[in-house]
Every structure is written in structure tokens, then in C-alpha cells.
Length: 184
Image 1 (cartoon, one colour):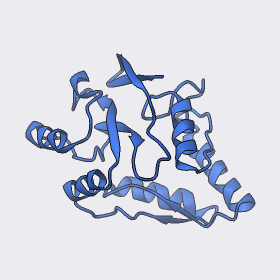
Image 2 (image 1 turned 180 degrees about the vertical axis):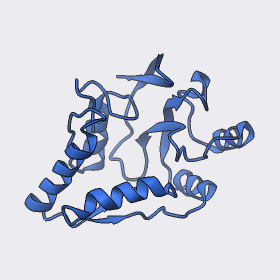
Image 3 (image 1 turned 90 degrees about the horizontal axis):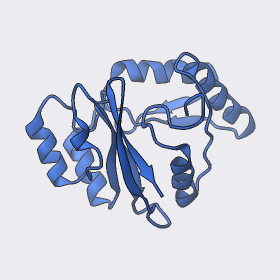
Image 4 (image 1 turned 90 degrees about the vertical axis):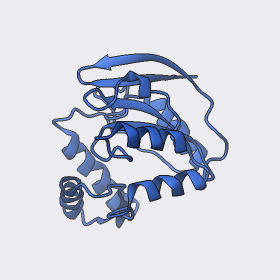
């Protein structure tokens, strides 16, 4: 889901072109829908209903770990079009998940933070052992950003055909969030 003007992804604040590049390098299709926060659920349901009818979609994979409100939302919005939600990370231990992610060879950087939890100095940081240790020392922040404390941009990994080439730009504050520009 992207902003109504189509200039950035709803939560990560990055240009939707980067998401398209990710999908191309992963070899999977992407559907991007412009929406407001007020219409988010309606548009989300339209997309998954359309896939269910035209593509025979029967299941959806969601990355929630333990936020019951998110799980309840996912289960509710998937029920209408008859999509079975699968939450493979549900109940897993955070540091274990991060270590598996790193051992698999994925590379990602922080592109957005909630200013109440993390300042702009966290933007652009690579998720690695040092990041995990620093986040643990910082305290009060979920190691996986499960409550929206931070969002990331995955640019390489074993399922990518090649790494995404980019540079980082300005740090931008909007309301209570910091966003990092990702540039070609």
C-alpha cells in the first residue's frame, strides 16, 4: 500500500520504485495500491479479493510476531474473501529470528523510526550483531520493531538475483517519525 499521491510506501516512507525493484530481483509480482489510512482496509480487501478470484489465491503470509491486534485484523480482513492467513513467525523469539535472518545472508538498513523510541541517528544503520546489541542496550524497543519502532529496507539476500544498488539521502522528520531517503 502506498500513499494517496503514490510517492511513498504507507509505513516505510520509501519511494514505491524501490519496492518494484525488490519484486523484480525476487522474481515475484507486486501490486501497489494508492490509499489513505482511512481507506487502507477497504483497498487491502479489494486487492486480496481480486487475487482470490483471478489468481486462485487461498492463503496469505503475514510477518507478525505477537501483536494480537494485528493478528485479529489480519484474520478479520482475510475471512471475508476466504483467504487463510498464515503467520509463520508467530510466537518466535526476536533475537533468534534476527540471527536466522543474518545467518541466511539478508542485508537490510533502518529507513524509518518512531521518534519517541529512536532518533534519526538510527536511520541508515545496518541490521547486524552490533545493531542488535545496541538496541538491547538502548532498551524499550522491540528487537524486530514489532510495535512500529522502526522499519527497514531489505536490499540483498539469498533470494535476490543481485543486490539493490542505492545511496542514502536526507533524514526527514514528519510528525513523530524519521524517514531516510533512499536514492539511486
